[in-house]
Length: 299
Image (cartoon, rainbow, N blue to C red; front, side):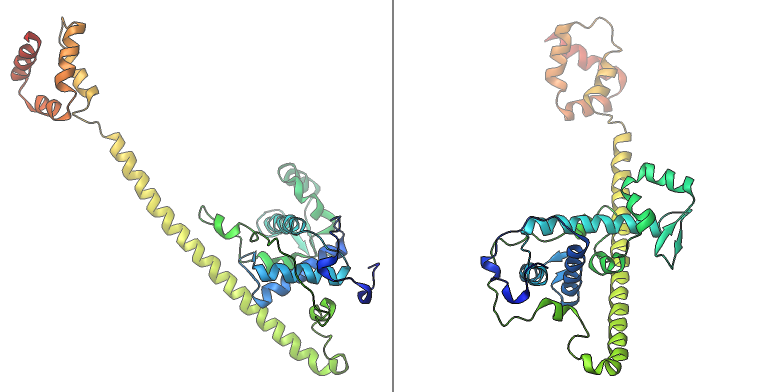
């Protein structure tokens, strides 16, 4: 960071910086989002209004850069797309393995070639993997629903606010707030095990909630799909049944009579455009039908 923390001007007065994302900037941003998830400021992949303010200010104080909200929104969508792509590659494909030491997905050259032809965005994962995947899983793991009713759960971030944030000089530096060990460095040996245990417990609880949530969504999708299938079958069954009293059915009957003229069809239409007349006609014995037609044409 070129500007020291002590010399940073207030956030409101700082100019907007061009967003040319580096790995360092991206990692700081991801850490800020993880912290919002843990604190309840980001729910189902959506940042609350106050959380938006905290993220922008935290990013500025960590790096001295003030990106606009559109830049952050675009980056969140980019991260979500990357998370989904890597998750599909690592857990949803046959022919791929996992190198635990290098933390990358491995496969034969032919397998990679075939996969990249269909999924060109996955090329970045072949040699570099996705080091940020675990953190992205915390952010997006519970928001990627499967099925036709999952769209609303994966819409992304809430529209960012337009207002800026007044930063107090007494605010805690973001570096300290992001570092769980920064509050008590001298007692690191005593706090290490406790912090690790707490973090593990929270992570386990969060993953269980995520799994339960996805299971519920999937069951709802299955139930909804079953209802839709029944409705479609009912509609199709209805459409497959011919209407005995339709205009088309009535014309099929009339067309068997020879010698009808254009004027005769016009007279018959005036009477039989009504469904009740057609039904009455079709229920009559054949000889009575012919007599009724003759009477109509004589008029």
